[in-house]
Length: 637
Image 1 (cartoon, one colour):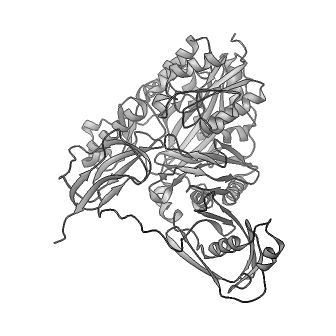
Image 2 (tube, rainbow, N blue to C red):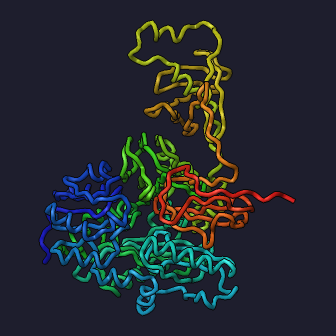
Image 3 (tube, rainbow, N blue to C red):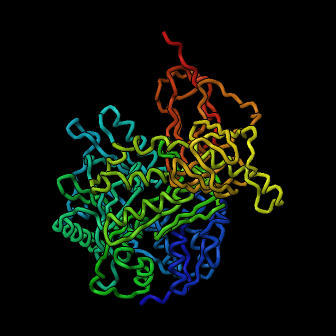
């Protein structure tokens, strides 16, 4: 029998490390964090009893260095390692090295990880176990009848190395791009193809197994709302599944676990077609990002159960009965309207109200950097019914104060309140159909700008009495003027302290302005960042980020027409073959590939013409706004 665990190292970062430490503390375990140099002051480091530095910044030099992680565990006196998710969590060699070092591995046997590590080999095992599968397609012999195809990296997940191919002419380039991304993400360029199912549902089953032959199927989750093949909103149980389908998914998941002598927590993922046929996708041999919805519905702590199973404890023969419904939304620092572009910078405020669970790796004042996934938090609501859980989650997100970075918060709220989602009409094409409508310009910021100007004019609470009284003389004078920009629109506010057309000022303080707008009382919470370059206004009318316009702005630097600037900090991972100054390019042609925060972004030619300058090279790290290339547009006939 395995020895009891007394000290736990988490070989991960961010919200999952913080979440695991929370359970470890509840169980009386000492905790050890590891961190890269950019993460030296991160929340997961502050949450641990001890921390060990992994020198460097890039994951390949830090969190993916299994030898350094094991060395850190031994140096800090830990006797167990929990991998979280991502990084080394599904690395069989790392699991073996942990065990060979005399440490307890909080995960499945290395052999099970190995068996499921390659999606192609995993499917062979599942076929032998009787689990339903989509038939693979050989890209070399694909015909128009095989389209559309989905290309997938054999060695990984999370949407990396995935491409949808709808015409054979683009298949070769898509294979090359998918393989290159797979090499970058997983060190393995193997890619396979299978039919792409339009409007399919992504449904998965949480399993938990012990070393004594018991395997639990802990219900279903629906994870169909995805961007770039990465999940955005998840819920448990998957709504609208017939009992027969639900039972067949449970049976197939248990069969998959038994086929590899599984132990610990894992997830078996399925694609369910519009006519209700399930097909095995993959098995994730680790804890999933969305595990909190299963915990909420079953009243379990899956991390605590992982630890107990690793210590050799036996599970009860049957799991507890589920109750209610849970929904989780992933809050990302990204701009969905700009091709999901990740955001970096200081997160000044992160405050999410309501009776919801918030798993996060950040607090106000923390910096979101370029090296890691841009997820800020997971927000989970649990209620007796699906409608109540969805409503509670949308309300909490709508009322959140998130300052300093563009996020997908408005998209999440709009998704949760969308009629299709409310009716549980779920499929992986949701954002293909509705993204444009869900990312329309935010509501008019004019009233928010007025509130910001009034707050700016309000005397400080510690100002002399004369100043505080003088600011609110009921005497007309020339109006004050303030100008702000929000979402590309400029607002000029002319105001008297107590007189505004259609608006009555009820009170105005530095951080709270109460207005009566068209007969309705509204409260506006106002906050400025530390250097007064942005003003954040939150109310029931929406959240607005306002940039004060200087009265005497400095001349702006101008860039040469056709300049391609880095849309974010990142690393140039690829330059188009043969691209050099003097090359002819066509509008929309991919010229460069930039990787930032685990996502790859294409830099496209803005017009047809000649490449007159190329400043980017593969492997180069670039800052936001760096000049990458220049395209001189060809004259129009």
